[in-house]
Length: 608
Image (cartoon, rainbow, N blue to C red):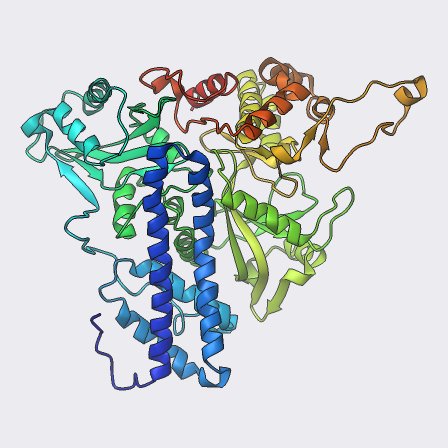
């Protein structure tokens, strides 16, 4: 590999060898990452949904595994005395040279940071030793000639229908379409509606990313039409019917629809990318308001997403002057939540102690958050960014917030001069707590807003159930409303798998004394859930009760929950669509969506 010529001072063989070890560790990681992404095509062709979901979960852990392998190798190979400050400085320069013709230099820089931050003290976390700022440009990185980032088609030459059929067959899916000509005709009609009757310019073309985007039970074609100075983004989902035949389900072209497809509340896509920065650049042309950090994350490169997010956060901090303060809403028993008003995220710290009735530990809570990270979030659970040893400017903290941090989480807070160090925290997209949203709707006497909130709340629970998730604590304060007015769950300390729960009916009292007793007269197991009790803490408000019972009375029945549990135990993986049902070409009755899911998604997404 070509090396950058550095001054003579780069004389440390140890520094060079460590740099090569770290680069090789990253290359191994990305090789395995791409293999899993390529395997997604095979799983999709075979309809092996459970295998695909397991592979997606395992891929999330690849990065940390490779980092720990690399750290262990370095700790076993070198004595601490050999690793002087000068060696660490040289090490970074050697590493830069090794990335001069690399296809994923930005990811390799982040991997370098992860390894070094596992070894070095946080006082070394600056640009002399790690990549606080990126060094190697990702502009114009060339792909292999036979594997371009995107393909370009010219429908003016052969016609739109022929071009569309060529686009689809170029993906070489080893599975027959039920009726490709019919589907292509429907896509053609939809695209002509999108492009309108504008005169075709000389540069009229369609650009399509070379890799299909796989997630859950779908594969997605991602592209855009270009006509003069106008660009028309579109996404075409490919699905299976029960005969294992393929069909094109719809065309997504509305900006909001495509944004929701790439939402932070959904599982990561699997897509084979030789040059990920080129994919990110293409996707940003479709979603210009979505930050690069979120695009990297939704592509499964969540560590790069974290790196870019933190750089954006530091820039925001530098150019703002407001103070961190306690986040609005009902205070949680487990988490202390604070925010910077000018920044659209919240910071969550696990408390050192929890009052009754909470019976949990910090380790158990971290396991719950890890469960969500690895699970299919079906658009109803917020993704979180986990950080360690984060330095905040002490002067930017309101005194009330600082006092609460020191009281509730003293083990995680350290003052170091002008800095406040928080040793562990989660960062999450800020949303309006549902209880506040409903309260505001009632104050404004907005019946439609109240009904929408309750409709969305029940929809969120039902879609979580379809993904084998029981929220545990179903109070409205644990759900948030996004800018798209979607309700999303974000409090994970009591989350459980549906299949681990035992849904029961409250036994009938045998005597008057039992009926009047303040305490249950029947045995209650650790995982027992009594759905008929939900109403006692959810439906005290008559207006809320009215709309809850109108749309989601079944959530108060043991039959609903036990029926969903049985479907999961039978191996049925439900279809939960990330786009409106009313834009689908036809109702494919062969899909596995149960009756309770399809209407709620239709009404839910139609309102967006």
